[in-house]
Image 1: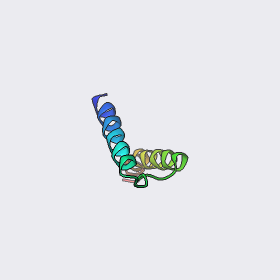
Image 2: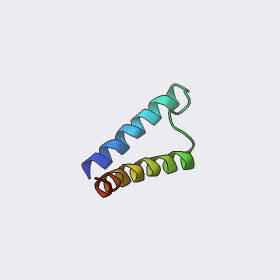
Image 3: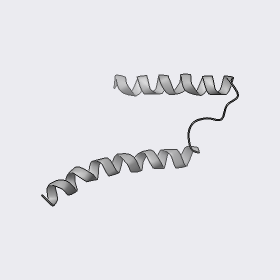
Image 4: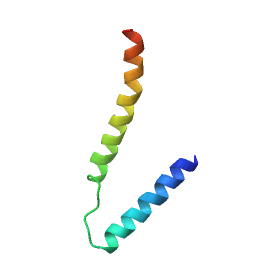
Length: 55
């Protein structure tokens, strides 16, 4: 659980710094970014299942 809070804190600091420096955020649009992260997570979960199934 601490990892979640640390990731949130670091993300907020990065967002603050980029905004203060008037730079574009280093992230895709909100919905596309969330869907991409979910896709990466699901792909990481499916791979071991497929590896066990075919080995």
